[in-house]
Image 1 (cartoon, rainbow, N blue to C red):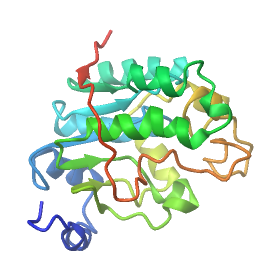
Image 2 (cartoon, helix red, strand yellow):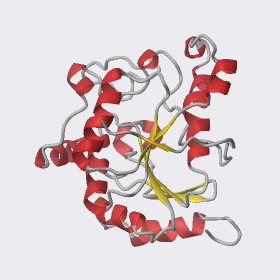
Image 3 (cartoon, helix red, strand yellow):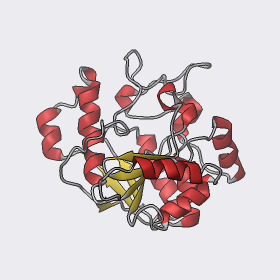
Image 4 (cartoon, helix red, strand yellow):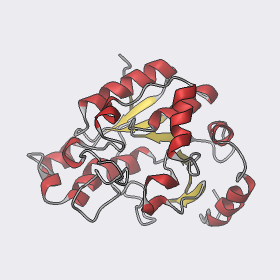
Length: 249
């Protein structure tokens, strides 16, 4: 990190330097400490997650993978997580969960999502991930410009809370994702066949009709398209991490 804590100039330089580099080479450099000593990949194990996880398995199976388990995920997502981790030989998948004490206080009967989805996402996603990322110099995401209008200006490198955030697949189109999955015979998330091109928590994810934005099924009927983990307003929400490796199987 720069002495003044401002990573923006570094990210501008990296965006120019890596503009023509492949996603896999960017991921390899991140895993090998080129952008910071400690890097972690953040994955939802959702509809398009297999591509980046597969790439990671080809460059470093030891790189930490942070899996945010909101405790409201589809059973299919939990099964898919185990399937991909085993198939790719990922050795350091870390389940990130909301704190039990906070959940008991803020969402005692599990209905917070029905009247305040932002507060629910903050409790179950934003704060747990912020805690888990403490101590990491680099975070890696699978976000892509094609996914929604809020991501259409996405850069390869961003600065956030004193760390570099890398989006190796930023320029990938949906057909690029599908082509990679076909070429490498990667398993699909089982819900994609049932009309879910973007998959979040059970209460807040619905099927998408043909022609709709892939993320239109997330928080349908609300003026909300992001859970908040990628838009924390430049401020790190502090707390205690729960870095417990998952048992694969």
